Image (cartoon, rainbow over all chains, first blue to last red; front, side, top):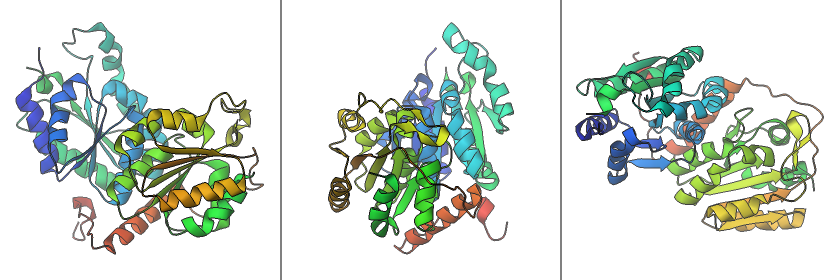
Length: 169
Length: 206
């Protein structure tokens, strides 16, 4: 299985179509082609972090500055960011639009991803974070725009889960 | 050297800057000098004050962003030095008050307390060119003035006593601080000719 070039482009185009040009990310396999596009786009401001929790702070700063922002991370990075999500974003009513690559779920061949994949939805539910699975490249732009809109209207973290169906081919 | 004295020394210079401070004693001492709408107090999420500062500085090149950090918080997010070094926001000053103590959470000694761990050296090793350590008010004041005049990312590690204020309390709720800070930042940005984007949820007809 390889990462889908066309669908990575669909996700990136969806981010841009939603009016977002500020991105924070921690690179991972499924996000690689997507982040390459972000890096190559002179209008996009990409900050790669050393650990995903940093991106929550960066997203808050961008929000205060009035700059639409999206966070890209793997589900294991979401775990690493959790205190920031709770004790900055949720505590202060700061919106986060998170695009999370969900590894370790249906069809996962790699054992090391599986424990995280199994608990991801339960953790999102425990944190009251609305989430939606993105599976269809034809719909993903709309889903990104909807995730961003809900994050802004609810002043809350929102997660769009990038699935195997979408990211691999 | 006391952190409160350092804050008092620089207050006239930072009262009109975008300031992000960490929790507890540092936040309270800044607040007690006089709250400004351009101050944001991160009362939890230890380690992320510098990341918020990066997000602000990155999108507001006309502003000078000051982050007031502590050794305990900085130790929780050492990766921030590497991210700051890589993107090098020139309008960002990172002040770390190093009291060698987790003062606001019980006063336990931090890893910097015996002098083994050198935060300024960590910052320099991460690639931040202008990172200095100071232990007197005079040296702190000089380092601050130099950093404000310099158009570059700077880190000042100020060795201070492990003492804090006697009383804690602010007259607003945490989200209120965020709402007012955001409004202040956007009004300042608008004054430079920039117009905030209109989101569906914020449209007047919604």
